[in-house]
Amino acid sequence: MIVVTGATGNVGRPLVRALAEAGERVTAVSRKAPVDLPHGTRHVQADLAEPESLRPAFDGAGVLFLHDGGAGGHGLAPRAIVDVAKAAGVRRVVLLSSQGVATRPESPSHGGVMRAVEDAVRESGLTWTILRPGAFASNAFAWTESIRAERTVAAPYGDVGLPLIDPADIAEVAAAALRKDEHTGHVYELTGPAVVTPREQADAIGAALGEPVRFVELTRAEAYARMAAFMPEPVVETSLAVLGEPNAAELRVSPDVEHVLGRAPRGFAEWARRNAVAFR
Image (cartoon, rainbow, N blue to C red; front, side, top):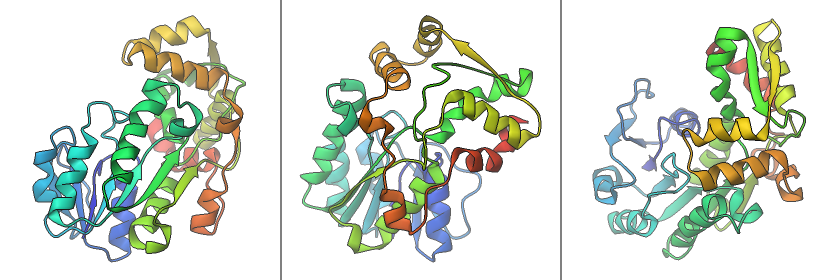
């Protein structure tokens, strides 16, 4: 049995589907009941912030996909989660971590929190694989409302890009790591195939929709004000640093998706075509 936490998220949803299609027995864990689980998938409602609530999910499980709870690891007690899993008989963990552990180790919001989660997994005595994705292509969903209403994308640093990773590729790498022992002990950095700027993202979404999407460049102050409305200030500061002045490690296109899957990662334009309905 494979337990997938964060089963309704951008990675968890395609991961559950991929595992079910491969014939695996899957327990999907989420705070809220999902509406479209594959046939035969077991669901357990639980909260990663409350490790004891996970006990029913681990019944009969041998492998765990550990998500960050949608909060970048904030508010989690990773050692308690791992202890509950281990006591139930889980023997292997695949952790969805963050590229920031390596690229922004000095940042408590990006590197520090997930480093603590990684340490808990490494020191658990269980076998493990760690996935460190960079920026997600699905972050473009933040523009859904403005694209639907005005065919407009507003973002800072319009001509500064990152090699955005398609969450479906993260899910496929995770599925391979959950099913095959050969990935034990590896840390995989996951990126897309090329650097893509916000302006290019707007163009790609427009092409997927079949009509232009206008790009409006925000100043740093304007972007800060928008982000601070729903993110803690330290997270905003580091996020804007990554978006505006990515370092060499954040700009690097990693070979790890192709190494694991035997194919190149999907580009942003493909993600946009697959998700165009969200922006109509």
